[in-house]
Image (cartoon, rainbow, N blue to C red; front, side, top):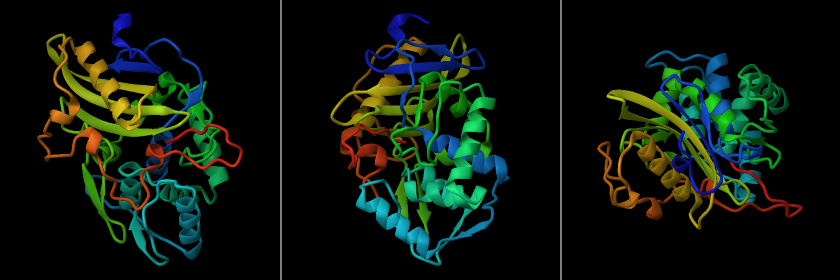
Length: 303
């Protein structure tokens, strides 16, 4: 892959079709913003959903509400819930993947494995099985500073997750309606632009702008899936920086010239705000979009 393909900052990796993963410079374990991709992958592995199925019902508890309040107080990304609320598995995954709800990551981990600790152990075991040798997960949401990975490793899990039809359909959805939170929007505003069909955005002070993505483009005379990850993109709006870096990288891979800024495009799925004008449906902006409050002043990672 020519050096000019890669972003000028951070790290990136890409898989074109079914080829080997190609990697850019600066591949080293770093804070990431895509731990929820692994969380969703494991939940669907343990509790598969068929087309049109919503899955089992998860009843939220007073403990879940208290956990949500604690997370909101730390300015994490959460969706509003109430005790006794019932979410289907599909709705819980929508809350996890579209607005990046940390509180629902914790709910799913306990529902799937009985505790967050057991679920995290399964995350790391699965990472090893997938050859993600430079990845360490420490919590289901990825809010913990100690979760680190590389762009190369994150391409592996993004590709695996996108093989699951339910996962792929959820991350390709612009918005969803939850019982209490109401309408939640997908933070990936590239959906429907230039072939982008997923996967997950995120950022924070330590991670920079991050984006695990898939786009379908014409390369070598055929429609080809381009799956990639960009990490550590700088900028005042780090989410926009991650989206722009991925969009430019895909353009270069597909051999296309640069075009007007992303904020000038209109999605064929629906008209969406420009990347610089996004608003969150949450009471607290997505974790990956906000600075964190740190007990020790240590840079943290975002998922």
